Length: 374
Image 1 (cartoon, rainbow, N blue to C red):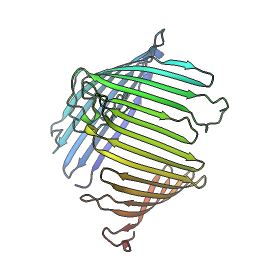
Image 2 (tube, one colour):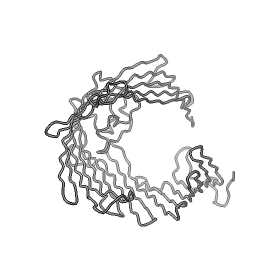
Image 3 (cartoon, one colour):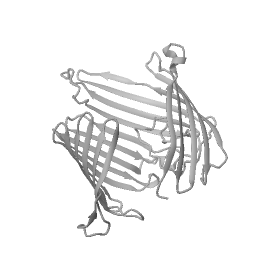
């Protein structure tokens, strides 16, 4: 019950654009295939082979500057299961398809020391067969950053059911540095703001309710990213209910860098149908030299008022070798999980392999003076 086995598995992809006529008007064509046999929960076995063919057209730009493109996506899924709630012991062969049409209208204003871009965007996607497995109970979080992605629900062998229209608006302010030269380390300074929402002709019960795009009118997704300062980066992602009154998610991230010192703070909160999450985390790194660094990270769960873990590591790295000494302390306890203190030593030979050895583990329930070694 405690282990999961995925064996055998494979994944391959091939760009087939070369078989199209040598003309940019024919776009791109890609084929991919993957398969796996997954054994979990003692005797729950699922074997899958998925084949997909994806065609993307080139951009068609009108005389007014409106950019249009379309895509056609085909998928063949072969599944067989044993003691599984979704797949039966008889082979299931399914064919799925998706058609997408994207339109955007980039508006650019050039200034002496900056550029400003406003981009309204519309994306229509249609699943002609409307055949999708039931993913209503899965957890899928949609944001302004992934709402226009084809696989925004994170499904490995399924296409989103029904017909939807995704509407978005983006604004970006780019600061031009006249003295950049050829220095690749100079920071790209910009301020970006995005808004998006999804509309449907009917409710789709197979789509995850936590995504909110199963409804006729989804949440309003937004993001703000500020990289205007040399030493501070700031980003904020939010999800607003379509009643325009209730904030269902907040994600705030701040990164501060001063010389060799970098620290990052994250605040994540999900409410209502998106779940019940309220955590604060921090990761800090100090670069001692070009080859050595010291790292620390922690996370506190405000929902249950508990610090979940501390991670501390000392790392040496060069072109072909990475060696690290890591200390990990966890506080979370539930069923088979108990608080632990672990000390690891690891060596990574690039690009060959990684060797990790546990050299100390505190005995759960001990007074901290006893332990066992490996």
